[in-house]
Structures are given as structure tokens and as C-alpha cells.
Length: 506
Image (cartoon, rainbow, N blue to C red):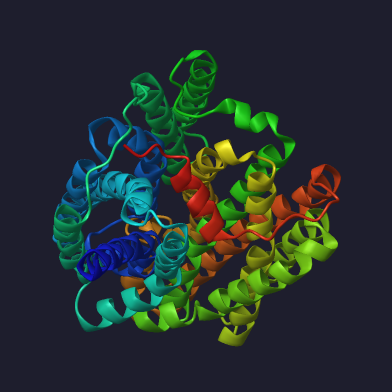
């Protein structure tokens, strides 16, 4: 019995480390972007693809990955996904061109999309006792969330002491260890009556998201008067519309659109998506500002993001205390206002602004996200019955990744369009490839350097104003549509348990 118990917890440890690196890979690249811009001669469009390729694949494949595990065996698919994750990490680490890195990031996202739901689905198999399972869920959820704040700091340290590829190379031994542990310690499981995979739905959603993302990035690269960019964005919208129509008619739909018939789930999802949209846009921009404008190194850039993480933790604690008393309407509206206030303050950031000013507004943004994000998820999950809570939680995760993908594409386009417009006589290669290339090209020419930095800050300010405006417009909507009643604070462990319970164990 003791041996069996030890085997279970060793397997959980391997799964937890694997989930930690998935979180790391969402944020670790933000610190590496300025270095990648120089080492791979990457323009702003390529930097956008470095970020969005991973989250795009993660959003598109996360839902069907669970169905694949049900049909072919969760253990088999999970081991394969971990090995693929390690191989894709190697490909990322040793990529020599922008195209190679983007392709490797797509594969990395596909592997992560399979690892996330399947590592959760095997926990009931490992821990049939509910008390032990609750402890296991807590460890799994903590590991999943811990990677996000660790990413910028660890990435900065690795880049300063090694090279940018090391941020991916650390994944390899963890992925291999996880694959071996799952193969040896986790029993096979599946669904005795698996659903058919909605292949048409998967292809339509991936094509639509890819076309929409490409369209926005193309507009930023070639200008807002580029017909091809607008055409691709329109094609993306059209394909996503067809996807939604197909989901209404398909017997084996990829997503359950009936979930959106619940007002709480519908509006909780809307506000969660809006907050994620702003968060990913800021993560894409602020590290570039720290390194290209303030002149700090990669580790310093990661450390300078800590006020945001501190604000997020503080905001989440306040939200948990306030939510049962004040209700979702008050807390989420307050969170949106705090986010808007922080983003609005950030829009006044100048090239010569001291760091304390930036630290204050990113801490405010973090606090607002900590206030609002758990409430949005709580409203969504609280409005679903137990049987659909797991499916709803998985759909929320996929929507958040999709929001991050579109956020980087659209907000990055806003930034680069203003940046190039402010360059004036410097609007030529390599200055127009992005702020990192512009700073390198300016060299010791202080006038050109100041012009490049000022142009970037102008673009960042406009992007922050756009994000602030979205939050301000969402405030009256939130106050009108959200319930007055108190809801339970979002418990990530409980949501994970609901998701695992909703998966049939064979």
C-alpha cells in the first residue's frame, strides 16, 4: 500500500512540473522578445507571431485533445504529448530563423494543449479517494499558476547568463521526466463510449483564428491601407462565423453553445476575455519598453514586472474577501475601474519617466486583474450545474487563450502603426522593424535613439489608451448585466475537480 501511495505522489510531482513549464512558456518569451528581435533579425510582426503561435495552438487544440484521450487512451496521448513538448522545446532553442521559431512554437502549443486537460483527467485515476484527490488538485492548480509569474524572472536570468534558447531548453529534461513517470506510474484510462471528434470544427476554428491573427499582424506590418490584411481579417471573421453555425448543427460539437444560454456563463466569459485581452497586450509591450527605452537587461526587466504580480495577488485576496459580501456586480465593476485607472496612468508614460511611475501603474493593473478575473470566472462557473462545470471550465480556458492571441495581434498592430507614424524621416529599414532594431540601428546617434524611443512610447501609450477605453466601456455593461447576488469566490481547485469529475474514467 505504501509503495502504491508513493508511486501516485511521484506521478503527481512529475505532472506538476510539466504543468509549471506550460505556464512558464506563456510568459517567459515576453522577456526574450527584445533579444530575439536582434538575434533573429525579427521585426514586430515576427515578434507578434512568436507570442501568438503558442497561444493560438493552445486555444485551438485544448478542447479536442480531451476527446482524443478518451478515444485512444489518456496515458498514451499524454506520454506522446510530453515527448512532443520536449522535442518542440529543442527546436525552439536551436531555431536560427523567425520562421523556424514560429513553427516550433506552434508544435509546442499543440503539445501543451494536450498535456493540460489530460494531466487533469488522469488525477481521478491516480487518486480515487476524494480527500487525497483534493490535495492533488491543489498541487496541480498551484503548479499551473506558478509558471506565469516565474516566467519573466526566470527567463530574464537565463538570457543574461546563457542565451535566449535556454528559456526553452529547461523544458526538455522536465518533459522527458514527466513522460517516463507517466509511462511507469500512471494506469491507462479512457472513455468506454468516447464521442466522435469534431474534425470539421477543429479545422474551422484553427483556420478562422489563424486568418484573423494573420490579418491583424499584416495590417501592422504593411499599414492600415493594406487590402490583403483587411481581406484576411474578414476571411477569419467569416470562418469563425461558419464555425459557430457548424457547432449549432453538429451532433458532436467541439463546444457546447448551450453554455452561453446561461447569462452568468455568457457574461462571465465576456469579461474574462476582455481582461485577458488587455493582460496579454501589456505583457507583449512593457518588457520591450523596459529593455529598449529604460535600457535594463533581461533579468532587470523580469524583476520590474514583479509589482504587477504583487498587485494581482493582493487584488485576488481582496476579491475573495469582498465577493461574498458585495456581490459580483460591485467587485468586477471595481476591478475594471482599477484596471482602467492603471492603464490610463500608463498612457502618460514617457521615454524619460522614472521606473517608480511605471511600477505604480503596472501594480494598479495587476490589482484590478486580481479583483476582476476571479469574479468573472466565478460568475461563469457558478451559473452552471455540476454536470457542465467541467466542460464550462475547459471552454473558459480555451477562450482566454484565444483572447490572448487576438490581444497580441490587434494591440501589437495598434502599437506598430503609431510607432511607424512617429518615426518620420527614420521610417525605413531597420528602424521600422521594431524598437529593438531601431535602438540597435541608432547606435551612438543620441538624436536618432531619442526619436526611436519616443516613437515607441507613443505607440505604447496609444495601445494603453485603447485598453483603458475598452475597460471603461465595459463598466456600465458589467453594472447592468451582472447579478446583484453574492457568488462563491472562484476556487481554482474546485474548478479543476469539476473538470476532472466531468471526464469519464474507463
